[in-house]
Image (tube, each protein chain N blue to C red):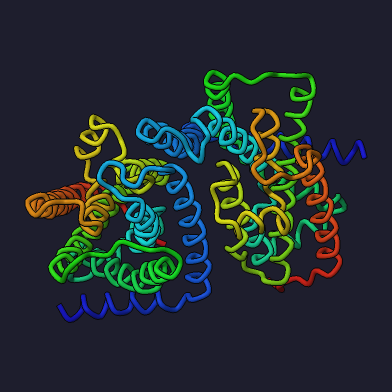
Length: 263
Length: 269
């Protein structure tokens, strides 16, 4: 346990070191957020509420989704893949700890740091510029905290799983990129899923993707009833467990194929 | 001059051949770049079923704006990929740019020929498909002037963003690392002009009218071609500024690039 804590802390500190890069990333996220907010405001036009989402909440959504990019590594994350290709995976597997957990805590440290650097700052900037929607009471904040943790878990176990493709093919990056692009659309990152036709939303919810962004957004905006909130959290947890088990299995198969060349 | 062109042609041929070596990975790449646009535009189409218009513009009209930028920006991205600031910055950092300087061939041609991202074709074709879709939805009164002006608009956008790429690359002579903020103007700028400009905050619009005149690249030409009223009452000649803005920005960037080369001090790696 102690070891994992140290790994997470190191990963957190490493992330905190690259301040210039974080600042540039922050500016880009923020600028794109403003563009997306403008598009949504223009779409609303005269309407004050569409599909149960008020204009204010729609603007808040653009901030939330931009804030989710860094901690959930929405654009790319090829760390495990790189360690397989470079051969580092061999020494990591020799360490007396679970390979999955080794990456899990590293990613937790990274996510925690980018949450502070990127997410909170984006939301603070948004709060200055716009009238935002906030959770109403302490319970909603608590549920939000839990949902964030689960979102990250779903996201991490999914990213870990698709990275494992590196054990089979030297071209895993193309396949991974495809999955990432798919996730922007199906997770409700580009637009809240509620705006889409019902058949499409149902299709999305057959995949784990909505549980990374859309669920989180809906809980934050308070558009779900008490019963629905519980159901959403449960589904997030189920997906997190499923993906974790899946990646354990695939990892075992992958390690069996692994051949490390000396030198 | 003709020998320089010949060298450019040969460098490109080399690029084609090397990229075609890995056909599967190339196809994957084409598919991926096209998918980003498909999903982005797809979500707009799906959302538009619920909202009738975006700032008073119907789907077909927005698709017109959107498709032109997507196709043209990708074409620019292909031609100027050697000047893509992060890529170029890496070459400065690693010293591979110094190797190019040692060769007795025009440096600009060498940089242009050093990279030619063919997989952008996916996005170019998709942009054209969306353009055809936009033609179906809108009913444009084509005149000779509009038909002749449209290619000039494309050219203006290519020159403008190409100029930004060159500018961003030249800055890395001093900063060494590519500054990510350049992305706000290149990728951010192209994303921004894909939508009608009157939907943005006033300060943002004024900035992109008078400081970085991106509003004339796509929005004003579209107003003219789609016969839409100008909400800001600008003098009528601004409809035709796209090629001029492009020309000026490319010329200015080239001058800066030549200045940069003259004062270039290697990183020593």
